[in-house]
Length: 387
Image (cartoon, rainbow, N blue to C red):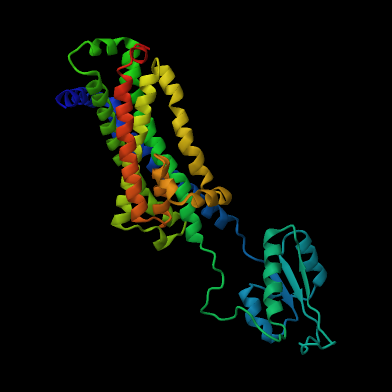
């Protein structure tokens, strides 16, 4: 144990004495996660501002409108025409200068259901202009509901008939993006350090020098692995802070309001998912670094791990793939690394369970221990150590 601690301290001392590595550990993950989320926030706000700027005021007129339709026309922003020149307004609509014209007959009347004598309202619009087409759709909808009817539907004012949950949709979107950014940030910090820790020493010939010291090979491998795990914890904390600070801002930008607020328990779940997931990332990166002949080979093989995280995380936002994932049930939480991505998604969507979180933590810690054990065993193979 003393040898393991000695090796880990030596590696950490080297990391902390390098300003570039310190910047990577403490600042880079936060900058990636927080910066990307702020970029999303800015893009969302810009789209809102653009939509508001493009939304031009409605220009619509009515001719001979009866008094009983006054409130409906005011709601639609259709005002009485200054004159009764129908041809003039038709030309304006064709030229996209005016959105709509409603012409009521002089003897307009509303017949009873089944009556043969019906008054016709002429509504002129331009389907090539968005404002015109939208106003025409609204006008026909409102005036259709004002016709004599045998029954009504969806007219209770205090009921919400549209059960579409926009907040759930936004949470699902965030669940597909944020886990990817968090683990990408941690991966970027740990990949180079893990590659240089073993494959780099092997390439420089320094590893053979270490192996002739009294320190056991297993202790050397474990010490190096623990030092990278410590770096992963720091990087995970940095990424978590970026995520925790940006989630409320993203929610506000997407008009989610109270739906994006999380409790302390949920932030603990998010933190546990990030940290334990990073443990497994480090274990796999250390195995790759041990097997690789040099740093170039290690850094070439390592991105495969990132793609294994990226693809399911991105596909989880699609309906069909999401259904397939949900069918796996608790199996999702026994797959190392993926279980952390899934837990992050669940917590962001407010669909998590404590039992699944405990399963994730236990599996990831066990996988990390097994990974470090494999690294120590690989150190006993001369062919692998000597490249």
